[in-house]
Length: 329
Ligand SMILES: NCC[C@H](CC(=O)O)[C@@H](CN)CCC(=O)O
Ligand SMILES: [Zn+2]
Image (tube, rainbow, N blue to C red):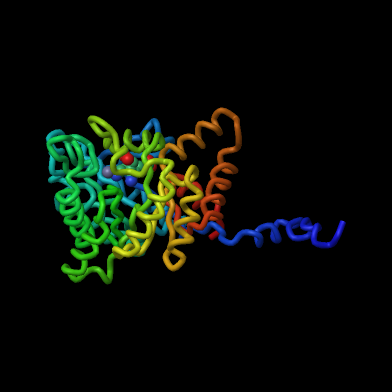
């Protein structure tokens, strides 16, 4: 055939094949989620999230030491209050200075100063009803009260030493509110604001909710997380959050939303785009490997390659510990 039909010469060799990828996965692209409980000695496996633990403050250092040694660069912290009576309608415990997240931030900052600490900011782990905000009488989110409370929690985590605050609530306008309060506090110059901008409602968060005890006690999150079909809504939310001061745009889930990741890169070509490979994606890959559909490592790598190909350069992944073993850098 004519010469332009000959493509094989560009990828017959493994190195040439690696050159075909715009982005290569490296350890510094990975953020590892940690579940921190309020019982210091906890080290509890989460059955629905293979190999993942709920950790007490007393376990964090010894848990992280080998991972930091293998090149872990960043974690994202989720508080898991287990003590009865902690949760209430206003998520009062979310910014408790003796709560698990703030204690973990301080401890990790002191022991691993080189680790970049992200703090997830939401109310669902601290509200009695399990929703990502403060409710009106009719059970819908009170956006104004929720945004005010979430921005206070974000500032508390930043003041405690989090390098990055990441609001996963999906209330309207929380990015602007957080940015303004960080500026008022004089810490906006040393706090990254990573927005879960395009976060979709769906069936892929079950194992996380087991791990975080954060399932809504009634209803669902369909009135604040985006509808899976809402590509336009996602583009509008991404554009809005960039205008409100987000430093990083995140898409979540990842594997079923690769087009949204590429939209985020298209809209936010001047910002880093993150993607969160959520608990359901992670558990599904484990289940597929266990069922013999594919090799675990091959699928974990292929799913990460797809997320990078779509345009992400940051991946929140429960596979992070494995990738630290699998990657050279
Ligand atoms: N703030 C909401 C938590 C949210 C899932 C949910 O809707 O419960 C995610 C955490 N940011 C779940 C992440 C995961 O499933 O891994
Ligand atoms: Zn939430």
